[in-house]
Image (cartoon, rainbow, N blue to C red):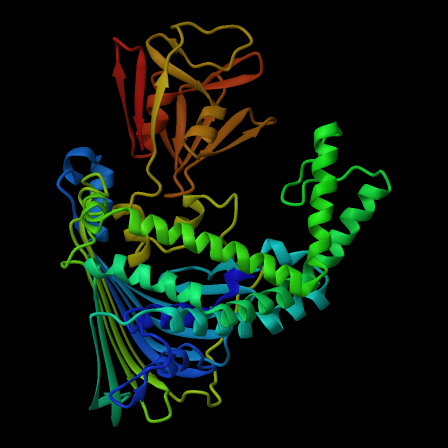
Length: 540
């Protein structure tokens, strides 16, 4: 269910990070705490945003990385995501259109997000891409419990946001000014809240935050109570059934895992102790007190740990905790506390040490404008039929690549720049001759022969056998090159064209062996023989 926390709320909290304050203290006559909270609770809006990511490779990035990794790093040095039209009609449903700029590629997209799934249509895509958002933890629950959880989840997140914002201390720089800004072509009079935090401030701010949290007992207990009311109705039936199964002598499973608990004297005592703990959960006030005490104790340990190490020692361990690492943000709110414009910039330097020399610095900039807040908004829906590309276990890189037309920017990015369809396989030759009852490759007249299963399992090729015609058809799913071979014949048909091979396809005890180098070469790859290691390097 936590996965359903909307991107909008996460983004708003990121923007609000530097605007930290103690309590509801006003700055420049503006209740900043309320402004930050309101920024994360809009139920509907229209807007646009730009996200820019800049990465600078570290000292050792080029030396240690392979050529493919260097190519990927080069692509990631600068990425832009432009959402030109964002529409949100509630906390769950969002539509967006825009484009992604990466290296020399500019790829338009359309996205439609609901609580069940994300549908993305990329320019050049044959069918939309679908990501299932349904949490596996709630997929099998009774609908009434799912509905109950959904109804109470949003209020709890709002309470959690308000509680955390309240505990955060003042940063070194926080001020409010009245300015005039253009939002969606309209000039507005807005309150600009500007805040900055340096990496050097993070440790002192963390100490103050933990101290504030420990002191606000009433708010903390109220938040724990809301969490109890959210989860207990969901957990109670399952826990009661677990206890009843144990009392009835049935095999019980670890509540957090799927395996059964073995029947031993120690495990029996542990189960009975656990049942006693579960009895506490039935008492709301006692449960709140127990959890509250645990949080307070954990806070004490964290605070002692922060004070035990000097700030200089922490900065030596985490060298990015310095003045050159900064978070800066500007929030522009109107007189009704609605967020109308925002700018966030996070820059971290001195990252060589913590990244092992892979990354020197990173910077992310997020800018947005928002209008028509909390008014009716009409989304631009995007549909996906049963033929859509659903990203789930079993989907390969080739499946994703084939979803795009070869002339599209997305195809060229995936195939040429990222090389997601490229294969590099090292084949070790276990002897030179065929071994009976074996599927191992062998040499025949100096030609490396491999079973057709090697092509499908290691090179992601499709292999079909026609018993009647005694032919094997090999298809490359990326470029759709087709190679047809016939048992005992040195003639191959490559996309219908006859080509002579060095060695015919062989059949040994029902297993078909084909000449490796010929197949790989016809598919645009190459092989290299290492005589000393008796191995073949295959690249495709």
